[in-house]
Length: 81
Image (tube, rainbow, N blue to C red; front, side, top):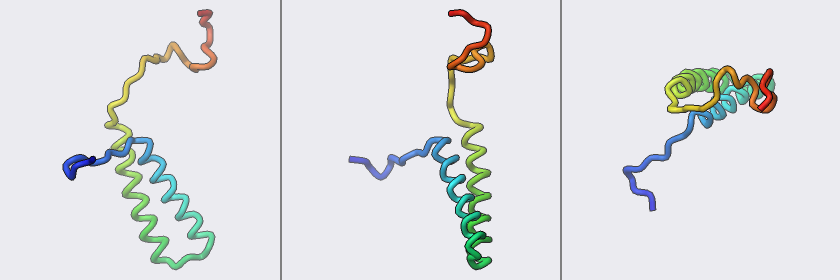
């Protein structure tokens, strides 16, 4: 059972998906001629979430063993291993 002190953390990629969905919703709302208020507030919310998403992606604790020498993982160039 989850206690009140434990919070579910969303990954940086989840924030990317959320901000993408919100900003795509703005496009759909504009194409459907929704009222200006809805579009304006959703755009403002989307921009704020986009700024937070950039912060989360840049400060994400992510590491990899890949280097620039690996280039593409599925087709290494100039390596015969």
